[in-house]
Image (cartoon, rainbow, N blue to C red; front, side, top):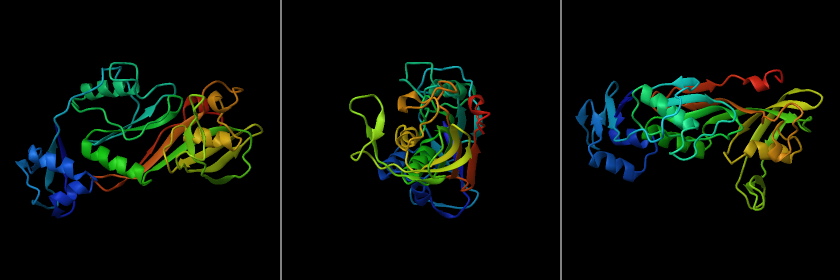
Length: 282
């Protein structure tokens, strides 16, 4: 399958490919296999590109998950991205032989829409978390998004319903996070990985608070671990001590992402509507 990349600024073709943060080996193989086209002609690394040119990449791929339902809640889509709203309780993937996971639904969506590419995603959210999941259709976009996430150049914000009232109405939580050796969960650990969560209380009630969390790192269960550690676990999150007074759902929702588009260079902002189980806490 061929993906086209319109050129908006004059420059060198090699520099254009490097702007996606592709490694030298990947760039070399693209040219070696004659998978790079410039205005429908096989390109060379030394080619100069001009505004309104079209660079194309030939991707020798196929859909690599079993086909699921194809029913996905699309929040944003173009030739490079498919950004969807994941329901709570749905896993991202469970191996490519399973067919009850979000990746399988994406695979069917691709199939139905003639997108014959592998299912790629630079980030993931927990099974018990609802909200935004980003899928990158092509290798260049995936590499670019991996770079943004690794360098904290993408805004990722969550809404959490936390138990009780927070001591401080806003702040940063910087405790390191590692895996618990005795229980299948994560925990604050001095030997863990750096983790940074910024938060702000949006609303307080007698026994819960609506909190906006912005994560600068993407550790497993990061917000859940951090909020539990400061004494305000997320409601319904029994793994980390959350109350089930309002139900057993972990009330955490990935509601906003913002980043610069790698091709158009425009700011992309995507919002996911509040899920039904969190309405009324707003």
